[in-house]
Image 1 (cartoon, each protein chain N blue to C red):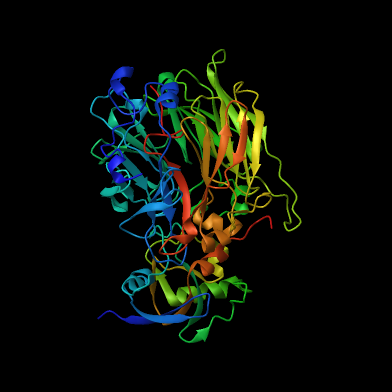
Image 2 (image 1 turned 135 degrees about the vertical axis):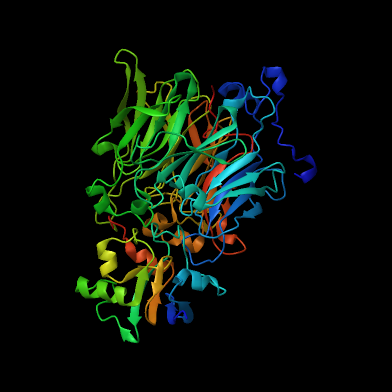
Length: 133
Length: 467
């Protein structure tokens, strides 16, 4: 029998909802069964439109993730994402600094634990800044 | 204008037989200028991808007839069957390059999803109510190890070639996908391995040449613009000249530091010409290229340099970001946009090696003198431009690419894009903002949408090529 995990999707306005995601499906696929899918684009891990940021795994806050989304210790942050998700294919849209900061591509990520993820365009837009401002 | 007097059979508004051709389009660029009627409708790529609005992208049909009760309104929205496409650029099944092909008509729009790699075919037989007729799913495209479709040009005999910016994983190399006249994938147009990066292209069949430009790998530009990627050489700065018949690269020119991210590329419309221009977006320069018959090769030289400007709120000088260019049908003017500065410009290119600034408009963006039209605040600078066939009306939209918009103009997502217009006096070389014209994507029924490329039903200055 497929295991399911409770994945809580938190929006920038603080509202959240919890969806059941099977271990063999992606967070995007599970969200498409609800009335509101998480944003997405390529569905192959290349474009980053679906990027969310991991906040909590199994009820434990990701201690490395500060308000700015940066980790003080990249290795631990990376391990946290790996605790929560497996990838169907390589998350090419994410650079090492993104992976270390807890960013996760929900179009190719299948859950391995109950977790809480910041989702939506505001969460995704943290991937890049205006480089000149 | 009522539907009753809308041309519904996609018959161009001029009589072909009197001009010695029986296919779509116009016999010459001058014929397009003389015979093309005023644009009454625009098709505009419109999108929700990258926002929190969980709706599909759509093609907006905009009423441009000043005598119509719905002037400046989106009169139809053709929604795509799936979400997440990022509609971006699009093109016709046939244009003036097939003007001698009897029975072919300019009727179907090829509309790719830049992020999804899904390719839509839209029938515009009923111009005001276009219909989706075919969908090529991403998996079919990935089979050719290509993704991220961008520029669509029809080529003689009803074939369609689409520039593809990445492989099936969103990495390099990109290439070109060919569709047949039944809108089925014929295969790769070129032998794989001719290029790494790809973006826009234009062809000049009489000179047996095609020119293509370079953005980056999809996985690099999709998530947003990262200056580190420029430093790491992950963005392009080369243009490629192809043997059009053979589909092989004959010459590559590295434009250097001043030619970073060469995007939109245009040959002059006159089929005899080997002159053209490319906008290098990041360096914010325009390069002129031409065939040097003595040397037996193409040359490229910087012809226009838009200087970065200081702004008190910015740490670094703000580059213009020259993201779109086009050439008027009479080959007399080059128009373009500096998206970050908020500037539209018009250069006299009657001497292509020495462009002369004719006029400009300062509107929207970081420095625009005009920051609202009809009380509607402009949240971004001018981006995609389109010109009437007669060269007297210049229109533009304000969105570049969803993730890049969010970096530089985050309000564009919240407010939606606008389409604006300037009146052009080609005799005197002037531009004047038409304050009576405003199309607002902020008022779309599903919420604010972005707007990108613009086309007219009867062809325009960025769609038609002559053999």
